[in-house]
Image (cartoon, rainbow over all chains, first blue to last red; front, top):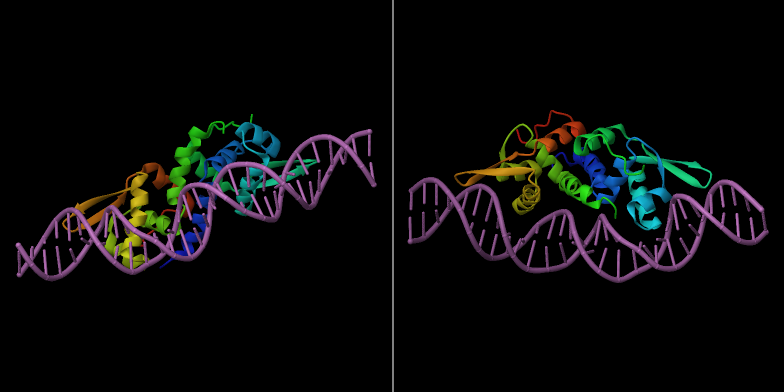
Amino acid sequence: MKETINYEEPARLLKALAHPTRLCIVAGLLNDTCNVNKMKDCLALPQSTVSQQLAILRAQGIVDGVRNGTEVYYKVTNEKVKELIKVLLGDKQDIFK
Amino acid sequence: MKETINYEEPARLLKALAHPTRLCIVAGLLNDTCNVNKMKDCLALPQSTVSQQLAILRAQGIVDGVRNGTEVYYKVTNEKVKELIKVLLGDKQDIFK
DNA sequence: TGAATAAAACATAATATTATAATATATTAT
DNA sequence: ATAATATATTATAATATTATGTTTTATTCA
């Protein structure tokens, strides 16, 4: 395919966001940090599922976690993703509050 | 999952865009129309592959085709998608020129 | 009408993703 | 060091996606 190289990287980024759970996580982390435990409660999903989805987002450099004791607080670390989510969903997401 | 309903629709939209070929197609159609034959040449992919990817984009209301004789000219019909692609890739895509 | 061209739909094998239970690791507190 | 808590990783079965060859449908033109 011609020009494939140019589209694979942004396609990977979109793919990481293209799942309801991951999209919800990223939207929820737009303006605040959150730990896995609280996320799993808010999302009503098993902890392993949430951690697995976070691993996918981390692998694309979309979020990153900072450990504080036994907890790891996540936040969105990619500015382009923040912009994309705002265009897609608007700016007032407070799922994890 | 809590709030799932709100994220499934936008996640589906991102998913449709989250493939190098489809992203390239949408980017190429941002400012111009194009037919399947020219796309397949530019993308160096079988016609069936291109048509299948277009069907996925059509199913999400991202592109639509207008028939002109034997040819079908496609364009991007979703304004939010245009915005997203511009944020993701910038504004100067001319793959199909 | 019949041939040629363009595009869509179908079939399917290979590959990737998803959800989640089970297990492992890291940190803190006793 | 042990228990408790939080998070990450692994394994895996179910499901979905991908690429592409083949077939079908639509349109034009001779």
